[in-house]
Image: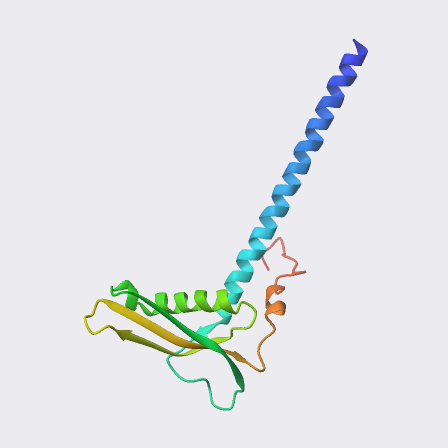
Length: 147
């Protein structure tokens, strides 16, 4: 009888320990996902898109040309959507280097069925350190008052 109580308590203890490890792993996984989402937002916000040339007097390197074509629609000519799409393409090609997309241009095909968007990806010689931006929230202490 006594050994069955000990085995029951041991089983309960193991079950609690096991569920505690699972909860810790879930919390760690959630934290990693939040950090990755934050980094993606920082990277996307860091890149700017303009129809103009790079600013005069600010040294840069050209990373390459960007281009995509899609069927013409009201969404296809939406400036925010175009900017987001160019940023996505640039971040996939140059994730740790891209600072801006300049000379953005839109051309509609002769028959009006397609739009082609182009731009030039650049990196400034005095670029902000993206790794530092990724760790912007590290070691921050939140006040219980929200201050």
